Length: 120
Image (cartoon, rainbow, N blue to C red; front, side):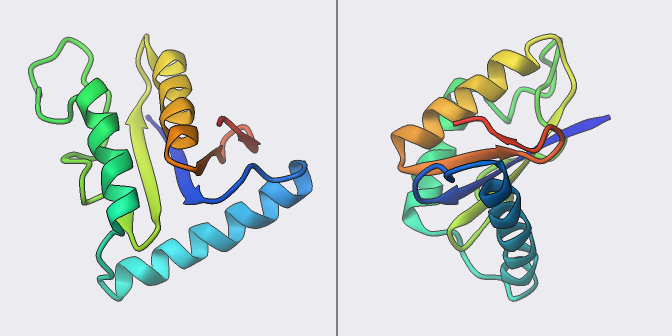
């Protein structure tokens, strides 16, 4: 079972409706960017570098490997968007909180499509 979080640039949406609309827009755009093999922006790569420094994506022997798809950087990103796929594990809530915090530090929004809410 996996858990997804999408990251995009900008300020937090004003409300749930705007967040949902932006999610739809950025998820579709991410697919297009991936199909066209658009490289991640330096800003997204910096976000991913900070994230994998905290939540490594290369320790396959960890008791609870947190990533469904690894390596995370640059594979999870295209253009100015990152789509993260996590495993469901005992520290998932903490990890999602860290993703939100790191996204904010990089001027980005982290959105949880499962719950339909911003986590940053």
